[in-house]
Image (cartoon, rainbow, N blue to C red; front, side, top):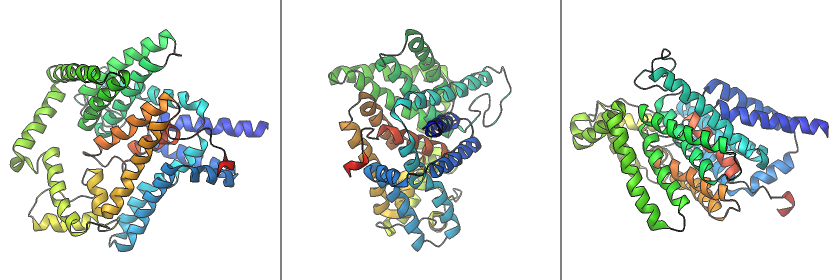
Length: 404
C-alpha cells in the first residue's frame, strides 16, 4: 500500500513537472516525458489501463489520427522525412493515452497552477529584457522579448494562460482574495506582455478567447455579451496599437502584405503563407482523398514551386495545420483531425462540471483558430499543451472498467 502511494505521488510530481517545464525547456520536457513513460510501464496493470484508453473516444481518435500518418508512409517517397513526421506525431498515440490514464481529478488545480507559474516566470524574464534590466538570451531581443521559446510558440501559450487566469478570477469561488487579486494583476500584466511580443497567432487567439470568456460570463444574456465584446475588443486593440510599436508595425505589415500581396509574396511571413496555401492547393486538388503521403510535402511542394516560378523558399511545413494535413493525407486525414475537436466539443457540452464545459470548449476553439497560421499540432510545445489539457478536460473520472 505504501509503495503504491509513493508511485502515485511520483506520477503526479512528474505530471506537474511536465506542464511546468513546457514553456521553459524542450529538453527538460522531453526527459520528463520519458520518465513518465518508464513509470507508466513500471506500474503495470495494463488491462485496466487499456480499458480506460478504449473508453475515451477522443483518445481513440488521436490514436487513429497518428495511425493514418503511419499508413501514409505506404505512398510516400521521402521515407526519411516521413519518419520525422511520425516522430513528431507520436505524442498522439503515446503521450496522450499515458497522461489520460495517469491524471487524477484532485490534482487538476495543481496542473493548471504549474502551467500558470511557468508562464509567470516567462513573463517576468520577458519584462526584465524589455526594460533592459538584463541582456536578452535565448530567443529574445529587446523589441521581442520571448527568451525561452520563439514568439510563434510563446504568444499562444500566453493567450491560453490569460484565459485560465480570467476564468480563475471569475468562476473559482474557492480561491482566496489574495489569490484572486494576484491573478487579476497577472491577467493585466500578461495582457500587456501579449502586445510587446510578436506572435500574431497568439494575439488573435487572445481576442478569440476573450470573446468566448465574455460569453461564458453572460451565458444567459447573449446580446449583453455581444455588446460588451463589441466595446472591449476595439478598446484593447487600439490601445495596444497606439502603445506598442511592435504590435502596430506587425498589424500594418499584415494589412500591407494583404493589400499588396504580389509585391510582398516573398519578403514577408504573411505573403509567404499565402503563397504556401496557393501552391499547396494545387497539390491538394490533384490528390484530394488520400494526399501525397506522410513525408512528401516538400517533394511535391518543390515541384509546384518550380512550375509556378515562385521564389519562396521550399519547405516541409506550409505553416497551416489544415493545409499540411490535406496535402499529406487528403480529406481522410482532415476528417480524422476534425474528429479530435468534434469529440472534445461533444464532451464539453455534456460535462458534469462547469470547469470541463467551459475550458473544454475553449481549448478546441483556440486551436481551431490559431492553426490557420501555423501547424500547431506539429510543433512540440503547443502539441504537448493540447495533449496535456485534453488528458484531464475530457476524462470521465467516474469511469469504472466494469462498465465495458
